[in-house]
Structures are given as structure tokens and as C-alpha cells.
Length: 137
Image 1 (tube, rainbow, N blue to C red):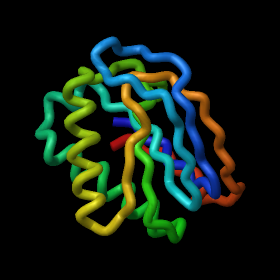
Image 2 (cartoon, rainbow, N blue to C red):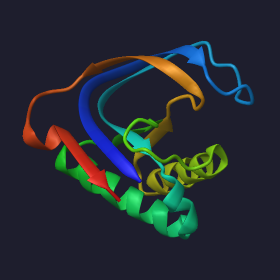
Image 3 (tube, rainbow, N blue to C red):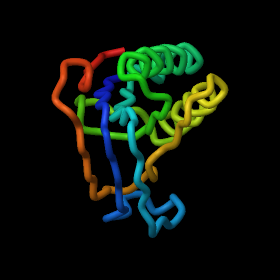
Image 4 (spheres, helix red, strand yellow):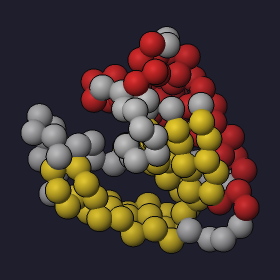
């Protein structure tokens, strides 16, 4: 799994193109302030491992990143452009749902961008060292 976490003073999205026929229609966007946006690519090899272990590793990394940036808001964004291999849609969605639930149980405000869409993104990210953290988990 590859993760690019970016601290944003403001982040917004608007659905542009639906890429998966089986996902629900989303016609509205959303805006977040003072948040971590986690661009996550779940890889094929992740499916060979215990999903609970993958979820725990992801959540621990995101909690650490949020603490370093003094925020409790985390946005999960499926971003299949960080590695060559991709996990299945089903596995990725389950992993995201598990991570969101665990983060919320830990008092983090956590949401996901619409799955199965290309999105128009607006990112306002300050330029300091821990505002952008890349990890291979």
C-alpha cells in the first residue's frame, strides 16, 4: 500500500467522471478545512495479507500524520496512481471502510471521497516538511 498524506488548510472536490458503473451517483462535492488528505493506493500484494493488519498499519500512519499536523480531520481518497499494481475494488472499499470506522472510533473526523470517480480537486497545502508525507506500508 502506498500513501501520500498531505496536510491541507483547505481541500475540496467535485465529482467529474464516474469510472465504476456499480457505484452510486454523486453529484455534489464537499469542502474540508484543516485536514489530512490521504491519497491511498492499495496494491494487489495487500490482498495476500490479513486485512485487519493492513487496516491497522494504515490507521496508525494516518493518526501519526494527523498528530504531527495538529488536526483531527482525515479524508481518505482512493488514488490508483502511486504504484503499478492495484488491489481489487472490493478489497479496497472494505479496507477504506474499516479504516474510517477505526479512525472515527478514535475521535477523528473521517470521511471518504466518492469511490469510483475522477474528481476535480482544489488543494491548499502549506509548504512545511511534515505537510507532505509519503509512505509505503
